[in-house]
Length: 113
Length: 112
Image 1 (cartoon, rainbow over the protein chains, first blue to last red):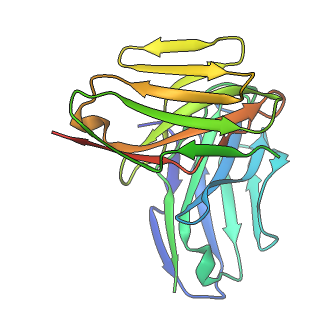
Image 2: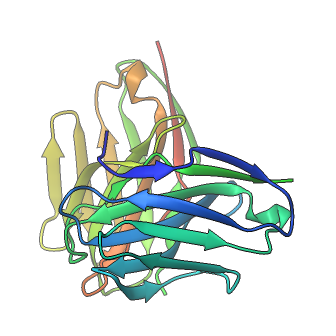
């Protein structure tokens, strides 16, 4: 158990809908990362937050957004969902985002039908 | 940005054999190279990492080597066991952001 908690574990929704994925980082970790894992694209970095502020952006679509709250938990919002958004979404955390170990959660499996 | 190539995509070995997974990276600024193991239904778990001021690092049956000149690094697993069966990912990250860019993964199958 990495200490990173993600909910929900599985989610099935229809095209056009909006979902929110939730992440609680390891106790004491200030930095949160979101990754998308799909068969054709591998593990793709989406976005990083540090202590409530956006620190880096990767291949995140405009339909997706994220935030990190004062209690350090983070949410990834996915809207206007398309079939191609079906993937495993991982949240990860690290102490301060400066080269410390990044710990991954177990992922949220999203299926868009 | 960084591009990480990983080979092979699938590796099948007999229990007790060694396994080697190779990765190359493109960004000469990368200086942190973690390796992750992902078991079915779980998130990636760090198994070993190496930084650019070190050429080799060992942890029991696992070792990682780094050649900064050639921009490649490798994972070596000796005396493989069935529980080593999983998908292994290499990654590279540059100082400053330390955001790993991952390879496409290697599915390691260890036959008893």
